[in-house]
Image (cartoon, rainbow over all chains, first blue to last red; front, side, top):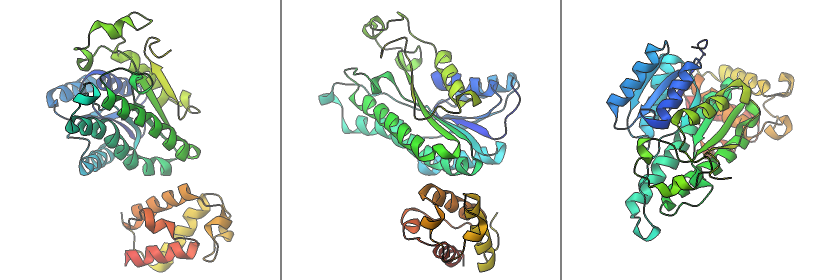
Amino acid sequence: MAEQRDGCAFVSGASRGIGAAIARGLAADGWAVGIGYNSSADAATAVVGQIEAAGGHALALGGDMIDRERIDAHFSALEERFGPVLVLVNNAGVRADGLAPQIRDRDWDLVLDTNLTAAFRATRRAIPTMLRARQGRIVNIASVVGLRANPGQSNYAASKAGLIAMTKTVAAEVARRGVTVNAVAPGLINTDMTADLDGALLAAVPARRAGTPEEVASCVRFLVSDAASYVTGAVLSVDGGLSA
Amino acid sequence: MAATATPEAVEARIVEALASFGPDIEQVTREATFEELDIDSLDLVELAQIVEDDYGVELKGDDMKNLKTVGDAIELVVARAS
């Protein structure tokens, strides 16, 4: 465990997969961490338990991140328990795949709302505190499909490309206050969310293997660290060469 | 928590906050424009957060767009806080 930091981090979608690995990693770096989850309360509690067992601090925060009042309640709960939220990782994401003619309005809306709109609203809630603190780190978990076509994911790709554009724009807005905003674009990563994908995508990965959640988390930890103080508006691909 | 928003207290807090963004505190008069003080839109966003934290007054979007001078900001906050 690193020395405990002032303030705290909030990771959305942190009960499983990449989000859970990021939360454990930030906790190991000394951040008290808010574990956002939507439906997996038991899994979120388990992540909190793992962090506390390792000597860290964490708080599980349940509810749909598209709900504006819920986002505000999460931030308020973290501020009360751990102090200002100085690190925000917008990781919560869903897929609802299909070729464009088959994507229903509700699947388009669900993916855009969860992956992009909720990330914006959390960012909007986080920034004023970071501006006043003259420090802050926002990391948006995008995707290789925000950079490179993957048929069957027009909604997911649009949400992730939007997240990348938002990352760059907000980064430019707040850079002179010591607040950085970056994106990480994972490729094929072994998680529950990718368990149903067939081998075609894997065959396209130059590294010839899927990545691990920890390999994504290590890049997020770098972007959150003091070592990345001059990195902002960047998109860091973590994809075994898939987008190269 | 919300401080008492007397006009004098609001003026002192706003002048102090604006001076922290760069200009000398003597330059921050009620008549000074944000343009003259080199106070930009991001500074005003931060000022809005300070006002919200200290006085519980929320300033959003259009509220800020019409502010030209330090006096405009003081009068808006005093009016909203009363």
